[in-house]
Amino acid sequence: MSVPALPRGRHAVSREVVRESQRGRMLAAMAGAVSEKGYGAVAVADVIARAGVSRKTFYEHFDNKEECFLAAYDAGVELMLDAIDAAIRDAAPGGPLAIARAGTARYLETLTANPAFARTFLVEVLAAGPRALERRAAVHARFADQLATMHRAARGSAAFVPPAPAFRACVGAINELVTDHVLRRGAETLPELLDALVEVEASLLLGGAPASL
Image (cartoon, rainbow, N blue to C red):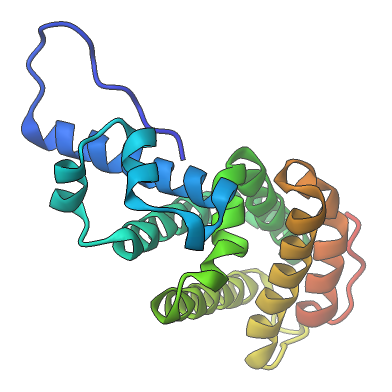
C-alpha cells in the first residue's frame, strides 16, 4: 500500500489532499505495524509514529485502532480486486483456463508486492475481533462472486457447470494454501504457488481440466 508524497515547497495544497495523504499514510502504517507486531500488540501510538501524524489527526479520521485496521483491510481488498478484474479482462480471449491463470497470478503478485498487507489480509485479520471476521467473510463471498462471474463469462454452452458452493469452496482452498505459505515462507515467494492454485481451480471449477496452458 504505497502512498504518494505531498509536493514540497510553498505550493498551496488543499485540505482535502492533505487529509487523503494523512489517511493513506495511516492505513499503510497500520498494515506495517500489524505485520511486524501482530494486531493485539499494536497501539495507536505505533500507527501515528510510523505515519508521521499527531494523535489528534488520527482521531479526526478514526474512532479507534479497530476502525483504522478495518479501513486498511478494506483499502487493500479494493486494490486487489481491481487488479484481478483487470487481469481477467485482459485474459478473456484465451478462455476459462487462461482467465483462471491470469487472475490467480495477479492475486499472488499483488500480495507479493505488498507483504505487510499480505500478512494483515491473510493472518492478522483472524485476531482482530468479530467485526474483522465478518468483513473477512464478506470479502470471501466477493471473491466467490468474482470467480462465478468469470466462469459464466468464459465457459461455452457445453462446458462443465460447477455447483454454486464450489466457488466459495475454491476461495477457501486458495486462502488456506496462501496463508500457510505466508506463515512458513513469507509473501515474497507466493508466485511459486501459481501452478498449484490453478490446479485447485481447474479441479473445482473447470471439471478437472489440465492446469497447464
